[in-house]
Amino acid sequence: MRAVVQRVSDATVSIQAGDSSVLTGSIPNGLLVYLGVGKNDTEKDAEYLADKIANLRIFMDSDEKMNLSLLEMGLPALVVSQFTLFADARKGRRPSWSAAADNETAFALYEHFCNELEKKGVAVQTGKFREIMKVRYTNEGPITILLDSEKTF
Image 1 (cartoon, rainbow, N blue to C red):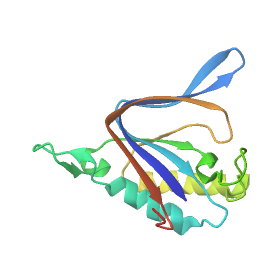
Image 2: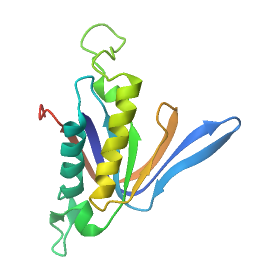
Image 3: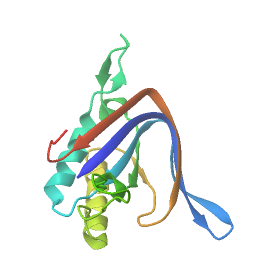
């Protein structure tokens, strides 16, 4: 399982519904998490990343040192599914998605990840699985962290 984690001062996600756009998630500040599920991922991967992200110390303390976590700050997360995190573009010009989980597995693990964050006390907003989404945000810092449950980076 892979995640791109961004510290944000605001973030929204919406989907297109006919001629209009429908807001599905919004946070005033906190973390924007793009989550990709791989075909070999399990609930343990979701639990590992939920714990890592909830406790990742990337918020400023009173000394302006990145020393506080999402949980310590009491901030929310906006979680957006993103199978493209498993793109393999090493050959040719069109990425391969063969390492991404099938839709049923990905959806179940995406939901499990969100539930695990909520169990830890993080308020979670989401996009809509398998929909084309528009994400708008202000990256604070900018702080962007790449995480992988297999610890490949």
